[in-house]
Image (cartoon, rainbow, N blue to C red):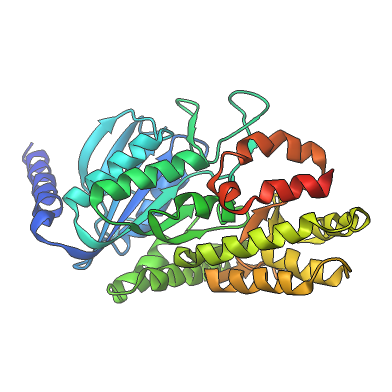
Length: 396
């Protein structure tokens, strides 16, 4: 009984130390991990949290998680604290929320607001941990095609669409009075121009993978070791630490060996990229009908990621230059490639030598285009670039 009482008092002390005391202790960074284990990735949740606990929060960096788990049958808010037990998550539970819909974008907003209130910092990083599918996927819950884009919750059948992701960060940013400094997706296929554009008004640096991520995801211990050693790092520098530690971990490091991609974007350069894509798209629409087949062939020859219509933008530009399309000025491709290089802060890969860091939707057939065109027309990227109109012209 005394042991139980002592444990309870210790947990209570940690709660006050790591939550309410933060109101007068503004740190350099707060990392908010939105860990949605209400799906087939559930077993990897405690693994990643245990990795994070090998380093834990520091005097300058708060590491906080909202952890939903099918096995635990609840959702817990944790302050990640260093320990030596690699088999059990021992960080103090600051709040047990019971069952929560992690596929509701409003749940994400509330977590960010709660985290900023209780763990104030100069800079905020938000990490969405879950399955990802870029901006589209075949919808397993409703049949046919729809959106499952990220944070799939099997208990509710809900997920956060690309449009809702943008809405979530707009609401959260307004609530905390500043942009999210760094948003990273510990999820598959999210490093797309379409997804980045949707959150660009409320996020400074965007990070994601062009291809699938292995189940083990990010190497949280490796990453936090680098970060806590340099807590005053800029958002761009933090993203570079994560890309480096992630790729190295799958080159015989802490996660073994696997083919991976990871990149980060400076969203202040997005207008330049979108303008280059828009101008390029207008030029493509004027290409002779007979040469459109060369454009489609270049799309088909370019590096794709899981879905055939998720194409590496830099590799596409390189292939279009090789295609010798006489009615298309090669300076247009150069402009897009240069804008992409300015936009991408860092890009790392193992097994994808053609990866340049950023993907774009580029279906090579009208059937695929028609299935997703209604959804694409709602995206901010389409509003700013008219890329869908270009695709329609090419594929007709």
